[in-house]
Image (tube, rainbow, N blue to C red; front, top):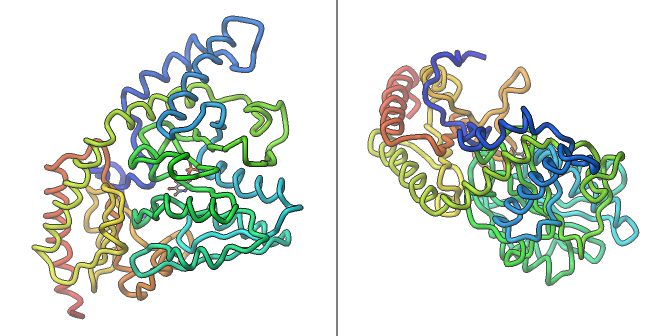
Length: 390
Ligand SMILES: *Cc1c(COP(=O)(O)O)cnc(C)c1O
């Protein structure tokens, strides 16, 4: 990797992960020390103390989702929650149907889970999105068949921050009698979500996307309605839906992270939206040919995904070693490929290779944003001087 972390003072990659809030860390620490009990131990104080802490966290997670605490299943994060939701529904309902519907811009954990089911004989419809990144609701309605078991649509996208019309999708699914799973890893704690008002039957959450620890998350399961097959066999923890000793410190941190997000959501989202707009304004004022990828209106307040025409994103990031950013190209392979999300928006190769994701978060300041804006404008100008394609 070309970037040296030691020089990266400004963190603008909050869609990849968020720093742990010091208040979350403080809540977790006793559970790495004297409160080490196993929440499944029923015969002594150590176990009771851990169980109590887990149940308190469960209430806090449920509260911000508008859910009943017993419908919250703790997992290792949104990847596991997505797998449990999709494979678990497909397996438990195989006698009722074999079709699933999802969207081209979903996270890999959803797309790869449905691919896995396809290999087992299920049929999957992957719906396209418009240039704004939004799903067409008429297309969704038309894709649902009598044998459809599940519709899986994310709330906020992890690359472009675009927020799908969850409440409308929920009401279409409920009208058609199919289950609705929502990957809310990026949205949960940042935008209001309510499993009842939004008619969500299953919802994936991840603590480390909301200032909590890595390796903790949850799946909301509307138990009265949803038949779900566990994907992990064992001691029958989490009412049999997810065996394995509970990660008590991380679950406690997840609960604290939820309470903080809930208390600060309104104020924080307007603050972040203000900073995001401030960043974009400076790009537009200082540069030609800046395009925002995906709808700006239906978007997470902390997300800005922009292409600087004529400038390679990797080169731009290398010229900004003091800022932690991501590009729209996945460099997991030797050759950088434009992401499946940008391709789904129909963005051309060149603009896709020029895409940078600015992911703002809780501890970013206006001073940082102004500094980054200045540095980006200066770098883009300099790089464009070498490649006069405009
Ligand atoms: C991060 C993310 C995931 C994966 O979550 P983990 O907790 O890291 O496994 C899934 N979906 C979306 C939209 C994400 O942003």
